Image 1: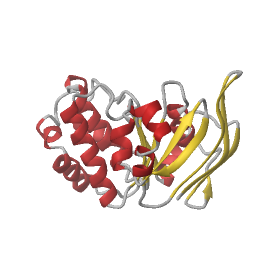
Image 2: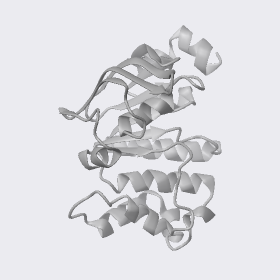
Image 3: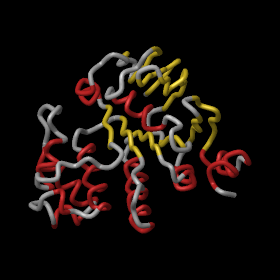
Image 4: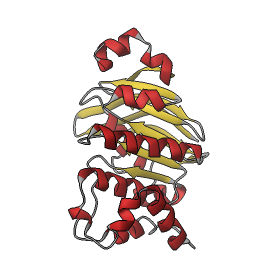
Length: 233
């Protein structure tokens, strides 16, 4: 579904991505782990088009999207749940969800809203309230559902567990697994390497803008280098 070849990206003179190569097959849940400043968020932003690629190629479902706008990529089926949720605080929960359908045509919005509310009933309870009044965990649920309202083929998840209590982390990751079972392809960026690799089919490890390891999720959990660097073992 997604193929990335020789991808680089810069912030001014600083090269943040240094020749990234990766592939994600349809239906996979793939995790990307690495330390702070390794390039995880930059890679997601480059895939979604928010951060421009300097060189390299991004192919999605056989289409070259390297220079496509973020809006075009959403139309093609690439949707990102950004780090820090970034919900529209003054706007109601339901209107935040409806914003996710802007690039869709002929969308059955009512049915999809009910599907989101079934996934996270608390959002239905608070659907008329401003999104800014939700707790951090509830905002993460809202950000996830807003992306799903665009009916993505590939869901880019950036640090969904950040700042959440352990029980909420489990709930979010269970929802991610449920989405995979429904056929959504997921690229999960997560600083909690153990949680991410535990549910991933495959994982990539990124260090200073370069992919340094790629293997099955369990294999990476058992890898001594990964244990020492990212699992504290």
